[in-house]
Length: 402
Image 1 (cartoon, one colour):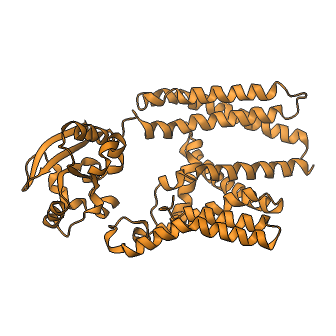
Image 2 (image 1 turned 120 degrees about the horizontal axis):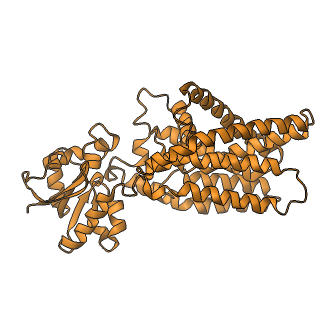
């Protein structure tokens, strides 16, 4: 966690909560001491980074800060990404519905996300529910750090989706209860709105559910997930209703459960396209298998994804060298550096190798080995074999002649 700068936000949040809850000066002082001790690993890491700044390669987080911000309104794009990564996948409209309806509903959910998040923060402060405040502070710091990082990528939002959703539904729940308890809206009106919402959700599910069959060929390994999840929701709903002594609140539980079922169905579209057949990047697993079976002991291999290869060849993990740690001034300089570091094999993969305009292609210096995209001998590179996962995903393995 210490190599990820948002990890420092956890220390800040914990320190603030301890200061709020501290009852004596000694408690406040000890909170500072514990926070400082917790920060020592991060400070040591940063000190090491400064000392080795010129040998850390080009992909260190600090070196990447702001590098992709050219011509972008990063704050607005990142905030929009939060919605696309956390809310949009949970409310997918059937393809047969008018596109204009999707646009309007997207605008509505953005408004709800904003209201729910701010209301959760305000309510947490008002009621002194500091755990909600802690979530909100961490999320704000996390967002600021990634806006400064300037890389607009969904994977940077996914890790905090649960916090965003927690704040959203917590805020909307408290907002709903405030209206309900204010007696400004009659119980009949609230029930009527719930009936309308339930009817709309049922129609939505009715049109969306048949679309799941079209997803099965795309991701057969995940096709049963929505059914199991929905069955779990229904079991929990029944278990919740049975002990209830009166009917009050049952209808709200039913509406909430149907809404959750809709979210599960909608999420399957994103899940299926992401998981597919469960073999994404499998060529690197096959690369590990090849190395274990054919490589000579203690020989090193350069690859763009050593962290994946090491998972499948843990005993040989030290043999896999990240391409981004060896970036030459040109192709010849890269070869010389490989000789210096006693590299035996160089693996070129189509995942990064064909993404010439991509961010990592340049940052990792893939142009140094771009000539290896064909299965043939090139200069000191002797072609060994090609590992094929699909026609578009494969790895060429070369041996460097001594």
